[in-house]
Image (tube, rainbow, N blue to C red; front, side):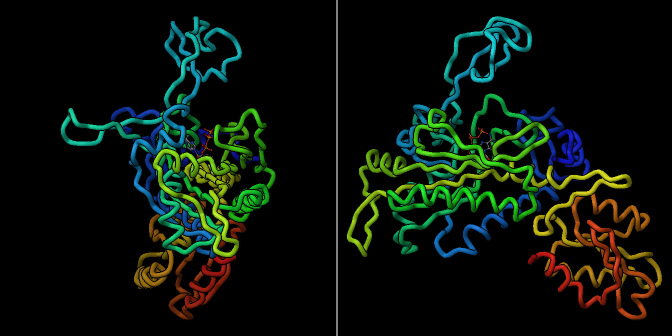
Length: 430
Ligand code: ATP
């Protein structure tokens, strides 16, 4: 089970400790928009690095890309988003609240019992205008997914990286959707970050790769500390599939508000590349040099949310104990790897501590705290998930050793200063 019984506790910790703030808070906030503070940025950066390491760095069949958010409007016509990226919704005629048609069981407003409008399609893409002269401006869209940037660059990437099928292209970046029902903190927002892979395969081999990527991605969450009992697959029924998909499975996490999607793995077939061939008139086929076959590859897409996985890592690591709140974050994801504490500020201990701090900082993100009792300083770090506490005391002056405290077990051992880098590294390379 999740240790976190309600999301509010996490929202409050995130605000109190500087992980996540409401956007434009001094103006009353902007619905569903969030700002990441220092600890949030570090955590989110580590989540993205963990993903990139696993899907790009450690493999030899995936390369990276970083596309612009604004793209030619024809991209979204070809992909089908202009015509069909919308949600059916209804409005209440009395209280004006808006609901997803799928979420309404009765034909009355669930909030006030008022009469509802007919179902209308609600466009999920954000529009904006490009150009400086008002009359000559053209409408462009903020991308609702990063995937299309990969498809339209398929030829550029394949030919410059000399990749052979099967191979993939990975991208991390912002996406925007004018969601009807944003909510649950950072779970569903209108501006969010995605981590997407488009993995190109030979038609006929697609379902094998679909299964492969389902497992890979499921295991990634386990590898970074999500408990198995809080993770599951949800296979989509044929009738629930998106217009481009042949098969789809979601990796779901048991959030405090219920099981919800973390990542979708979809078999997008050759739909997108084929549509771009039709619309652009350009060749996007792949030529297999060995078999001399020419074909449009099929695509398996594991598409994850940075914000959602960050929220899941936070929720899964949250634990309340009698005397402390602790985030048992995987050390690789933790914003700080260690905190340095001089026992007292006098007798040269402050200076020795600062030297150790500066030295460790060359390798890791390290925090320095000289204020308050040692116990309080440990607690403050437990609450933000720092795996190690390093205390410098009078014995340090004699034998150059420090106390190393483990966040999870709270065990304390004596270690030589010159072993610190190695010990922290060991923890990070588990
Ligand atoms: P949902 O049904 O939960 O809105 P979706 O099925 O529309 O999600 P996809 O189009 O499969 O989502 O997008 C891939 C991933 O991008 C999702 O699994 C999620 O992690 C992330 N994502 C999508 N929409 C949002 C959003 N509004 N806010 C935060 N993350 C999102």
